[in-house]
Length: 212
Image (cartoon, rainbow, N blue to C red; front, side, top):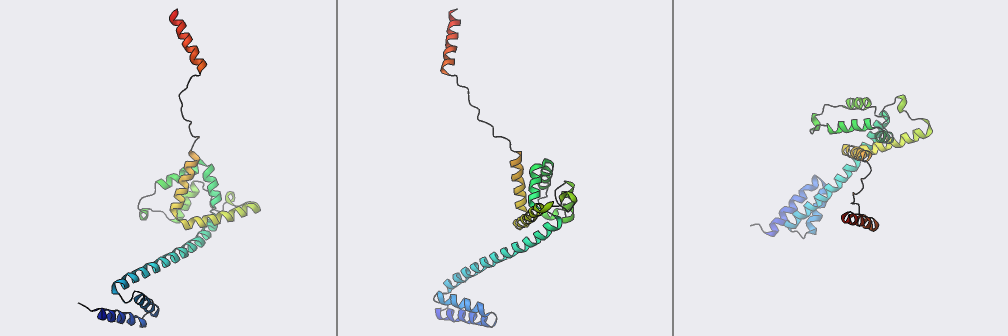
């Protein structure tokens, strides 16, 4: 069996060899090695915790950076095809045909996304066929100062929604459709209870019929 002194010497030798490759890594591992009082078992657990925390920070940084890139890409595309979230929400809310067409497209999506033969141009064509309010045709262009303000706000909302991914759009569309299609809540059916006077009249009527 290895002695504690031999294990310590071997670990320190391996850590020291990292100095020529990555000085920061060597310093981090040395700090962990000293913090666990040169215990090989505790050193392994400490390295695992250090690695997990580092990966969590990297994952958070990556997520923020990707969302920022997606925001600007989404904003560029939203302006390019005039895709305003405000105009789209208003049309989906008011136009049953557009809403039903979008729901049909969502429900008919194949389970395997790679099997879908749909490009960006094809999807844009489908939306235009459903008279979805996108594009720079005359009827979709902002009108007046407030129209442009609303368009800029709508493009920004579209870019934000792009960062949330496709599930956000599908869930939102389903919720809007369910809310729009919902009717008034039916009242609770309660049995009719006669009043005291009505019950008395009924008893008198029955008694008079029996006597006659």
